[in-house]
Length: 132
Image (cartoon, rainbow, N blue to C red):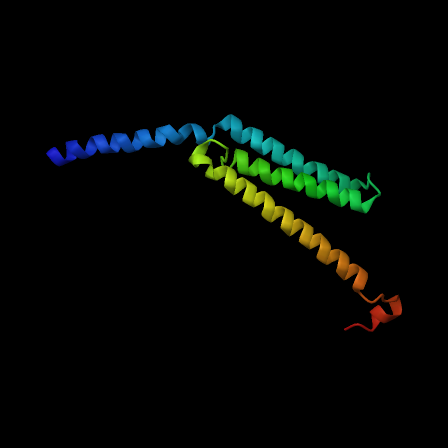
């Protein structure tokens, strides 16, 4: 019995420990803000691409990638609860690292696609019919 009563305060301490971090876990309001921002940041590029409002393909790709990058940050803040104050600043380091990785992945993908497009041998419709 004594061990159980002794273990009970530790249980409360553990619950209090979670209570101290509960504020950083977000609320229904912050989840809804994140969800609404995510929907908006998905709908805008979809609208721009499907309606063809912007004729300049490079500008359109830049806008879509920019909004995608913003959406990554929105997810990190509203759903992964990353901020500059928690975890002794390590969350800020993770945010910076993620931004660097996203920039490298997006710019590398664009670079590869551009060079594949410019270095591919042009094919006529007749040549395409003979391709297995």
